[in-house]
Amino acid sequence: WELPEVNWKQSCEDYIRELGLLYIDCVFMLFSDKYKVTDIYSKMCVAMALHGIPFFVICTMSGDVIDEKNWRMLQCDFQRKDIQVRMFNPHQPHDMLGTLIADFFKEVSWNRSSSDKEITKDLSDDILGQTVRLKNLEKKPELNGRVGVCIGFAKEQSRYRVRIINDGVETDLALKQDCISILKPKLLGCMVRIHGLESRPELNGRFGFVDAFLRDSERYRVFVPDRPGRAMALALKSANLEQVTSVAGARPITEDASDAKPAPPRRTPE
Image (tube, rainbow, N blue to C red; front, side):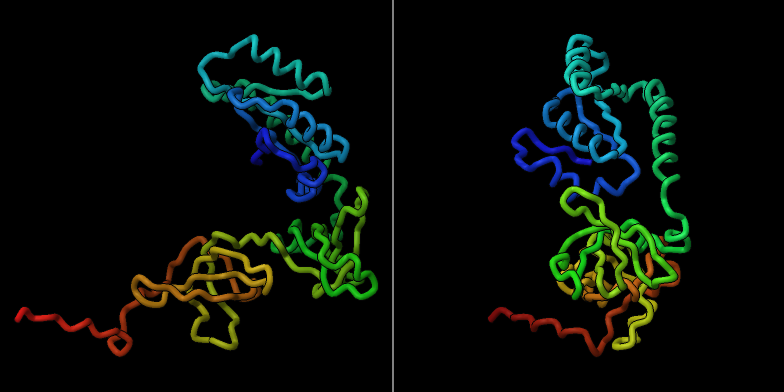
């Protein structure tokens, strides 16, 4: 993930929560040996360690040969915080990647072994692990607008399990579907096929491109070809969109003679 710059002023705690790092399997902290801001990186590592977030710190070589003096200084800076940093040589990637991948799988396997399979079974990736915003809560209105992550669905209660951080403590809530809205949808930047539209059934089966998520209306903005060189911008719910990797079966758009605009008349020289 993109690390902060030198003039970064935000606290590590806020940064971790905003990026959702509390809910992912592992963090790879990558930086070049040209741009070393070890103080900021060390603070981020310590904050992640306190929350139990698995992470690996990787420094990428910018040249062909390791500068041994700078490399020892870099290691010392991190070792003061008991943080291991690995040097990645793009010209000889296997030297480091073999060990890194093995360590990565150990971390992920341990993390996932503690998840409750009953509440994640058969739950779509469209909602599982997604960042959601709380809304329409009447018993705890102070939580409306808070952000959390969907970690499962309790079938016996017909409620989604949402994890939030409350005063630095992880809290799990059981919420109805109309009490959450997805904030980071996975369809952004994808090709989709429209289906299930009742207001404009003629658009069902058409293909489009998702370029934005409209948080106010909780819909996707989809560009659908309308005329050659033009597109319609539609605001559609995720329930009416299916991600596709191919547009096989799509029909070419042709300019209808009745819709074509007449060309402006030519001026003849006098």
